[in-house]
Image (cartoon, rainbow, N blue to C red; front, side, top):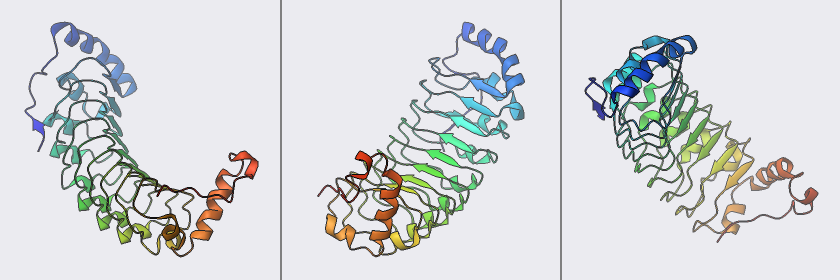
Length: 265
């Protein structure tokens, strides 16, 4: 899914090819392939030819519509940045990047992820903001090292219950979607510190949210149907609010407004 044939790079003219050949010496020396903002429609073949020497690749701000199957040659890569492109699908072979720790894919047109995306078990940071995603594969629960998950500005109507398997998750941003509720298993995220779900369709919260997510100190649910009083009635809301106040005490008029809570109705 989403893989192109690994052949001559489209949209790479002779001058660019020569430039890439010269720069490939630097790529080998540093392990960093820098292709940001070059008007590319695909990642050049010479980048894939660096194979396991590549530790990071930045091809953001281009016109890339799909990944070549050669992406799997970069099997030692730890960071891949493809933000601000024209990707619709992710190549299935991306899950072969077993060393990947950071995957930045915001501001594309991605409407579906590989069902096996959870095979990226070393992933710590995943940014999928501003795409066209309607669902998240259940396999995401295998990403036990994931610390930040950015899903804002998509078309998600739900999050999989398996997200509870992301035991290391500290920050979840799902703002500006179509979520009607939060999965009960989100309460298994004991390390969660930041939960942002503004601009959704949420009417109720899991009753154990503030009890089990005992490190949660930033929770934003503006522009949802749920009412302030219903949020405050969730067990252990008071304890959550104390953590929130403690975190922002020095920022809010020296603590003068620390007892005020703001929710949009």
